[in-house]
Amino acid sequence: MSASMTMSPLLSSVIIILLFLAAVSAAARPENRQAAALFVFGDSVFDAGTNNFINTTADFRANFAPYGETFFKYPTGRFGDGRLIPDFIAEFARLPLIPPYLQPGKFRLAGGVNFASGGAGALVETYQGYVVSLEAQTRQFEKLVKQLERASGVESAQKTLADAVYMISIGANDYLFPLSSNSTAFQSQSHEEYVEMVVGNTAKAIKRIHKKGGRKFGLLKMPPLGCLPLTRAMAVSNSAGGCLEEIYGIVKLHNQVALPKALKKLEKKLDGFKYSVFDFYTSTLELINNPSKYGFKEGKTACCGSGRYRGNNSCGGKRGEMEYELCNHPSEYVFFDSTHATERAYRHLAELMWSGSPPITGPYNMESLFKLA
Image (cartoon, rainbow, N blue to C red; front, side, top):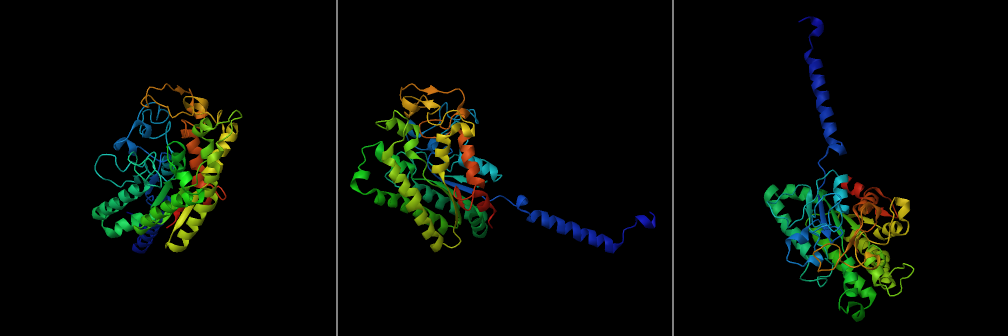
């Protein structure tokens, strides 16, 4: 070998060091770090199939056609024609689809776990006996933490839990339940007291998750509950397509008073507590009122259902013998059934939750939460 092709030991060492530093730098870049896990709590807006695995009725399940027809091509138990907000958040965070905690099979953390149950409320009494309440979901999480500590060791488990993001969608069923049942909740106490109970129980769940190591939380405000196909159909005078006014004040109390107040208290009391709140109300109402602006053709009537606005909870063949109508193109509709959005609408909302800014999403957005150390 000629002298010109012989590498000196010094040069060799320098190159090795430079290659090592480059590798360390690449590993440290955000895009090369292992993605934080995602834990999901709440109701049917987030339920990825939990209710498939509990003893409940068809009213609280979506494991039959036409649910799931757009993306999965079969019913997964998600209340919609395809993916939900947590599915898109997982995709944006480069995580796999987050499986239901109760899904049979050997326990694996993977990218996180979904505890959400369709029909669940912050109040245990909401559809009690038919769903997994937020309190019960929190107990399931505490059990999972013990499993994780046994599987990977306490130190590793605590790092996973501290890095993880926790999404919560809860409260809508607590406010809709008294309207669709014989409950006297709204008569036996003031709206302020009732909302305080709902938000108070949500705060308790956050404290319990925080106690186990959770630090980063993503929450949704209430959607415009009076403007769903379900509640429009319930309105006595609705010839002009108006919303159900009875529930407007309760939603306003939740979104503008009780929830912000509770989050500020938690921020002061809980070490390292960071949060993102998505204005589900304003963003959904914008789609309802201006569907064509976002590429939709219909913002008030559901794709699947029966009756006025297809607002009867009759989408699918396993909810009694009631016949239902089904649109040809769900992507043209904001709502898939009487209370749940289409996959296309959920993608739009998830994008706002992921990368939006105040006043729609703040003080952090979900992308920022995932990047926080």
